[in-house]
Every structure is written in structure tokens, then in C-alpha cells.
Amino acid sequence: MPRPSARISGIIPSGKDGWELHFSAWQRKEAGEPIIMLSVGDHDFDTPSETVEACVTALRAGHHHYTQLPGIPRLRAAMAKLSTQCTGIETTIDQVIATPGGQSALYAAVHAVVDDGDHAIVVAPYYATYPGTFRSAGADFTVVEARAADGFQPTRAAIEAAIQPNTRAILMNTPNNPTGAVYSRETLEAIAGVCRDHDLWLLSDEVYWTLGGGEHISPRGLPGMAERTLVINSMSKSHGMTGWRIGWLTGPEEMITLLISLNLVNAYGLNDFVSRAAIEALENGYGVKEIAELYAGRRTLFLDEIRGVNHVVVRGSEGGMYVMLDVSAIEPDCETFAWALLDAEQVGVMPGASFGEAAKGHIRIALTQPEHVLKEAAKRLRRFIATYERKAA
Image (cartoon, rainbow, N blue to C red; front, top):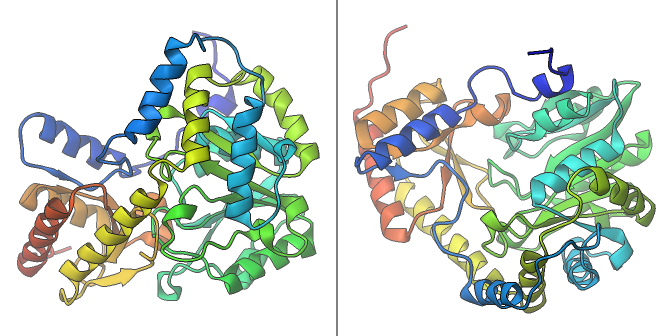
């Protein structure tokens, strides 16, 4: 075939990224092994029934057609209202564009702020699609590692040291996937200061904002940041709608207007009947409180179950759907540890190194199983650690 573009060829990351372990665990489970899957951030429960029924009603009512490119006005109004709650800044319908999922919001944000040859800063540990999204825009990037010893809170000095003459943006994620770290006000003010001082865009991925375990602080609400911040959001985690592909991007009105043109050549609007179900879910908060309470309870339970396990340190883990465990004192190579855990105890987890250098030596536990399964997983993990013997180099 003719040569594919360098842009599309460069999206796929090089090397192992942990997913092969997840897929192996999944295949073994499908083959009948009693694998406990703690490797992926997808809910183990269905979308709230009220949302499902709203979708069925919309489908039967004939809502099968194209929608307005930025989203149905009532949908954008509901998203704007939620953005006001999320960011602490009054948000209008013209400051929001609906997207087919949070990843599409991230894609739009990245393509909105960088050109070919521009540079960005990605704060790690990071969600796995971040590097590929910048590659898709033809941009270079530098990864700034938030240190485990600092609770995965990035520092101003580290971010500022990565700035280049052609740096245009910083991408961060709080509550963080994979670490569960919730960035403090001090951390966010430091990042905001860098953006203001160097005239940078801030791309703030806040899809876990309802699962933070406390007050959510958005950098968009800090002084001088509303005009330079794009907030990525999604209904996947907060409303239990991972497969529905509904997200949105919040930002300055002028930028949102430009992004409508990107939607024209990219997604060409959203699904009509799914949009109308999303409206009902947003306006009524279907599942939000219950999902937040569920994950808070699971987080507490799992941390209680592994408390006191020798040589295991909890890092981050204040919010989101994940717990991050430092197992480096047992096995420095977290991928080796994760594969051995799968083989010995049939528990599938993600190696921390999949998410950046800062998370090396850690494993990520997804709290996406019922409490009795999480208890069993913790039991297997304790047993594995008690008998683990590191292979000689």
C-alpha cells in the first residue's frame, strides 16, 4: 500500500504499556479461570435505569437524526450548569461544546492549542492516551514526573524546568488516573502561576471530579485562569455511562466557537437519542451521588484490607476509581510483579510504569469489583507478597 502519514503512524506508543497484561488476564478469564480483573477503569455495574429508560423513550420518539454540531442546546445548558459546579466559575452555553466522550474532548483541546512542531508539557503519571494525542497533532512534548515521595503532587520547579521557547500548553489530570492523587490548592496555584507567567494554555482533565473524596478544586476557578484553561469532562465515570460516549469541553467562548469547526470535520455532532438521555441524566443527577459513595466505600475497604502489609506503601489514592500501591521494596520491576501476581494468584492489575516513569515500582488497583471480590483480591495480594521471592539478576 502507499505510505501512511507520519502523524497517524506516530500515534501508537512504543514499547510495552501494560495493556498486554490486561488482555492476557481477560482472555484467561474468558477461558474459565477465576481471574479477578482489577486492571481497567470500567464500572462493574450498569448505567442507572432512569438514564436507560430516557434513552429508550427518545429512541421510540423518533430522535434518530443529526444534531447541532456543538450539541443540542438543552444538553449544552446542562453541561454548562455542571461545569459551573465543577470549576466554580459561572459557565454559559457558549463556553461548552459537547463531544463523543472525554477522549474526543481531549483530542479537541490538544488540537486547539498546538500546531505542528509546537511543544507541550504532560504531567505524569498520566492517562495512557495523552502522548498519542499530542503525536496526532504533530506536537512534541516533555513528561514532567510528579514524584511518589511527594504524594504524586507535581512541583512548579519541575514544570518550569521543562518549558521551551515553543511551549504552548500544560496537560494535567486531577483527581488523577492512575494514582488517585487529588492535587492540592497549593499545587494547582503553582501550575496556574506557570501558565500565567509564560502565557500558556492549561488543559485540565477533570473527568473524575465527582469521585475526589472531598471538595474539588478546578484550576479554571483560580485568578486569571478562566481565559487560558480548557476543562475536559465526561459522563463516563460520574454518571456510570462509559459506553455511551458523552463528554464535553469547557473554555473561553472564542475557543469553543473555533472548535465547532473542528467538530464539523471530525465527529459531525453527537448521537441524537443518546444526547437526550444524557440531558435527563445531567439535569437529574442520575447515579452521581450513589456512584461517588460506592467508590469512596470501596476505597476505604480495600485500603483497610491491605493496611499493615509489609513493604507496601500507599501513594496517592485519595480519589477516583483507583488505589496505587508502591511494591518496589518487594519487586522493583512492577511489570514482573504484576505478571507474577496474575500467574500465582489470578489477580489482574496494571503495572504503574504503564503511566510514566514516576509510577514505576507501583501497581494500580481498579476498584471496579464488588466489595466481597475486593476483599478476596486483597487476601490474594497479601498471600502473594508473603511468599514472593525475587528472582536473582
